[in-house]
Length: 109
Image (tube, one colour):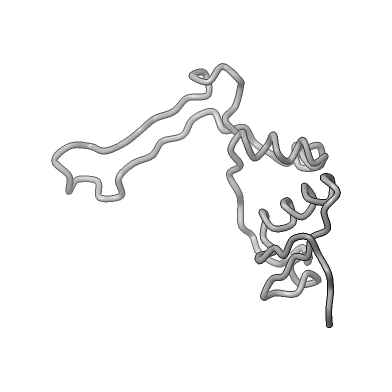
């Protein structure tokens, strides 16, 4: 099988189809390939993963016209805590805290 495309995108997770849609809106053709057939990935019982989308990802999805469909099921990220997984082993606690109030744009995702 031969198919001409401007882009070949490897990976049908979240990013591959989003890139293909962005390319299409820019007038480019794209082919997305993934090890798992698209029909199986589209099944409601495919998996139970949850995703944390950063503010930049939310903006991208909004620009692609997708966020409106996802927003009703989304919860805002108002705080993020990053820690060293070796709690108690390090001489100094290694961690970062971020609050949405710090960016003055509402939730971080």
